[in-house]
Length: 296
Image (cartoon, rainbow, N blue to C red; front, side):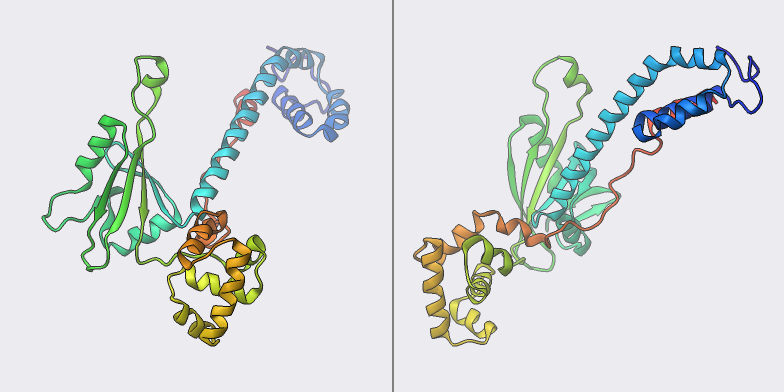
C-alpha cells in the first residue's frame, strides 16, 4: 500500500485522511461533493489504495449500523424496565446483580430484607441462612419459576419475589456454549400503594376530572369514605360519582373497578411515567473510526 510519500503533491493529505473524508461522505451524503473536491488533492496512488479498501469499509459501515441498531434496542428495553413500578433485577448464576431498575434500586437502598453485598443480591432470613442462594440454584437447574417471600428486619410486610430463568441449556449446540445463564427477579412491595394517574384514567375511560381522582384514590387502597375525605367532598357526592364511573367503565363494584384499572396499561405509569435519565453505556469510538485510526 502506498505511503504518504508516494506521489503526493503540494498540500495533499495522507491516506488515513482520505479514508476519513470517505467515511464522512458515506455517513452524511450532503458531504459527498466535498469529498470529490478534496480527493483531487490526493496522489493517484492513494486514491487507488482507497479503491481497494472500499469493500472493507462497506462491511465496517454495515457492522456499525448493526451495532447501533442493537444498542438502540438495548437502550429502549432498559428505558421500559426503568419506568416499571415492579422491581426488576437481572442476576448472573451466582447472584451478581447485572441490572436493577429504579424500583429495585429503591428497595435495595432501604436494606430492609433485600440488599446488595459487593454486587451480589442477598435476602434476609431470621435463621441467618442465605435464603436466595439455594433458590437460584434450583431455578437454574430446573428452568422453572420459583416464588418466595423475603422477610424484613423492620417487621414490615414481606417482599414477594418471583424468579425466572432467562436461559437454560437445551442441547449441545453452539448457541448454548456461548450463552450465559441469567435469572430475572421480580419484586413487589406490599407497602407501595398501587398508582393510576388521574389524568390517564380520565383519558382512558372518559371520566371527568373528579371521577378520575376518585378512581385514583380507590385504586391506591382507600375506602370510599377515605377517598371522599381526601378529596374534600361528601361521601354521598363520592357515591354519586362512583355510579358514573361504574357506568363508564362497565363495572358494577369497587372490586371489579380496581381489576379493570389494573388490567389496563395505566398502572404501568405508576413508576413515575417517563423513565429517569440513566447512562446505559456507550459504544465509544465507532468501528469505522477505529479502522481509520489504525491506518494512521
